Image 1 (cartoon, rainbow, N blue to C red):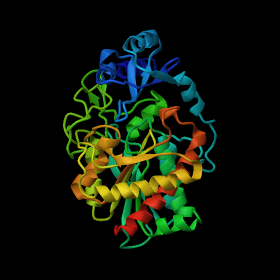
Image 2 (image 1 turned 120 degrees about the horizontal axis):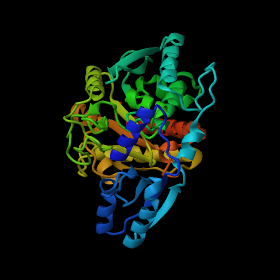
Image 3 (image 1 turned 90 degrees about the vertical axis):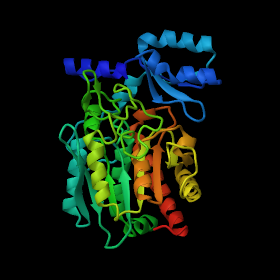
Image 4 (image 1 turned 180 degrees about the vertical axis):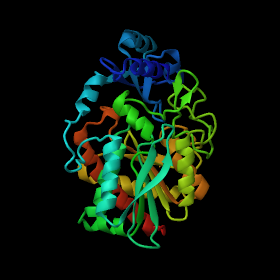
Length: 408
């Protein structure tokens, strides 16, 4: 997106964080095919429009509008008779509310968001403190950072579960949730958690996109992509459109400035290339792959390039229903489940689809965590623990049902 790229360059020039004062996020609901097409192309009409949620299967979209374009936006919606609501009145207010007080990390606080440095220090601490924990490096980044995770070893010959977070940089709730779940797998006394934890080995990577995540902390809280330059003005691919299964089969862009830019080729970014090599090297050690995103409250499974019901669709749908039923019990949080293309929209080149299509792993899911748009990517820190708890509840139910259906 030209707006975010331009603002990013300006931010670098003045060495200050990008501000979003008086930017608003609207929920818009086109009613006709013509309205839907107009909404879908809003980002191309003006660089002051930025989708937080692209038009989906239900015909709704969330879009951030720059202050100077808000009168024009109101006029456009009125003339086209497109219903809308204001979901976020001032984006910067939510960003400011995320800031945690600067204090020594005597203990790791799971109820706040952390920097990459703090997260990596915590992973290192776990490995030193617990013989079951091993730090693993799954890849590297364009800016030279490690993509660091942990392996939890609960015994030999146990099926593995791979958990992925933070592939989209601005989705801070995903690494926060994985860190909480990691701690619970190691330390919880709950019998269901212990049964799930100790019947598997775990590969957990809280942040697949470290460069982008660091950039959200230092410069632009709403950055999504990686940070590799493409030309003079554009940076990064969408790392969840850059994997090599059905790459560029729909729902991705060839424009390097787009939020959904799929890259110059499959695995054109070192992050996806190196991670794919690592995952390939351990492909015989795990049977389930679960990716975490935000937002929308969805539990999706392959595939994103087609609405066809392929491979073990019926089992994954049934398992997904059990999982979201369990998730709703604690706080009443309602999710939907289904394959990507039917549930939201066509989207090709994702990590989950690559794992499913390449290695035919039977249990492959993607969570879109809280919320449904009132906070969007800026979910308050006081929702980290509830989000994490209900997500762990759903994982317990997911793997119980998978076992019932004959999967490891």
